[in-house]
Image (cartoon, rainbow, N blue to C red; front, side, top):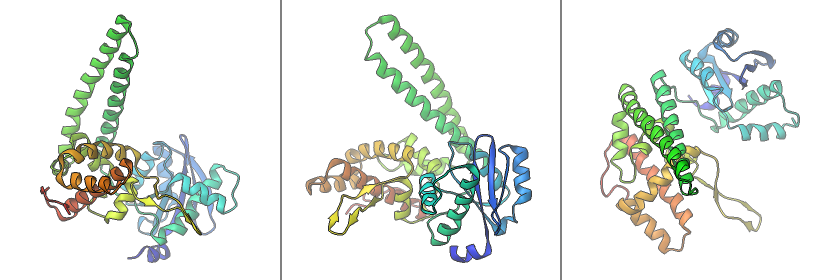
Length: 324
């Protein structure tokens, strides 16, 4: 079934999510209502929605306040689309909505989904199990601790007071102890979700370490399910042109999953030293006069192509994988 046909067979629902409430817009009459962002509110929401097989729910990311309602909708078999907030805002301005409030936002989100989903510009979120969501949260916590440890280590270099240095070292030891405990929990959760096999496969690729492999499993579950260009766009390493008439600007990358892109950047730094496929590709780009950052983005894309092919074809890493 194409997405155009799905539009004819489905009703779109727009939800603007806030910490304490959900503003809803649905139906041909664009009926609007507001309910609490809570378990009780979710039950009220379900009563107002069409049957799951006739409904597509569109939301914006709001710093995590949307996660519970998405989980509830997916558990009840609803198709959920998460729209980019900046794109929705620009769409609202294009519609002439210069004012901004929650009822307007819910209407704009619904219209955004109705317009762009049939054109293939939006995709339905992959459904995640409770264990998978828990694993994602613990991986986020692990990354937070790594950042805190790095910050504390940087502070040591900027002080000469011995007592302050001892204080910082105590904090670092505490963080490292907690991080070790979380790493153990991540291994158990990964095994429980049956994701450890996939992460192990990704770790076969030289340059992809434990953290990056887990991040690929959690933050990029689309690997192996969509094409290479779509994967690059999701991560944010797809270059976009900037041209008008005779003016031709430089292609630049935009958007994407920033957290994953940062981890892949570090993995690629390792890969251009230890991975024959990536090293050969990087050296050729540099020899042709490409800037280091341009070459790095291209290498990340190539690494993603290899990983996507491995996931799609259920194959293991080979030394000459992707070498040209």
